[in-house]
Length: 272
Image (tube, rainbow, N blue to C red; front, side):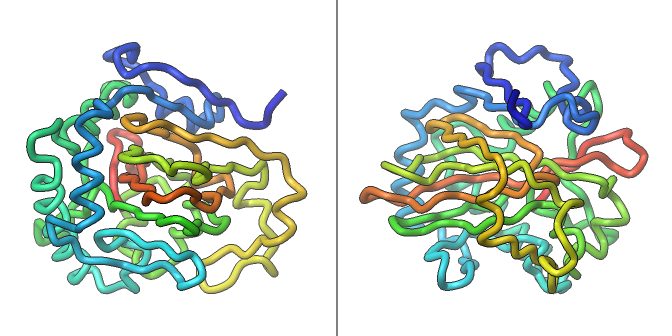
């Protein structure tokens, strides 16, 4: 029996009042692939706009070895400069609306989907005291040869950028969600390992980052590769995971972020 409880269903099969987010926190579910959240036919023109960065997104680069990066600024990479982050989040959300013009609106469809999983709780983007907001997503690009090394979401909570967010969220865990805009021609799979964040040795953790290579290959794993239009929601907070190297000729594009409960459990937050 796999360590990873994964379910696979279509968007139109989601019950309007499901409570799958709570199932994740109870350990009854570890991954959910939701097929057909967006029409693949409307996503390829979006991928082409991303290839040229037509909307003019600002870029954030991963370490050079990854040959990858993302559009927008993630809060855990803001180095605690939350004013700059909030300004970037506002620009990203506007550029994202431009990017999806002529297609289903990304934020509206995503929040509708999460609302069907939230058990009736409001699904919201966190706000700052001055009225600024977080961004619900960033856009990742992995060109041929690009990859993302093993990591997990809960390690982000130890970084300076989470100083405000940690006062709002239940930081026992956070879930990861990503819409595939364009999958890799080959490779680019999500690989999830049985090693969890609370099992990482202190010697494998420094400056807010886990470093579990090469011992991670001794652990069981599952491989997931959603198609264009599919959303993967999984317990990327607890479970160490990576994205395998991209092959072929085209860039792999995904958009997404994190989902978690508020400290009182009365609402769900979405951020990146």
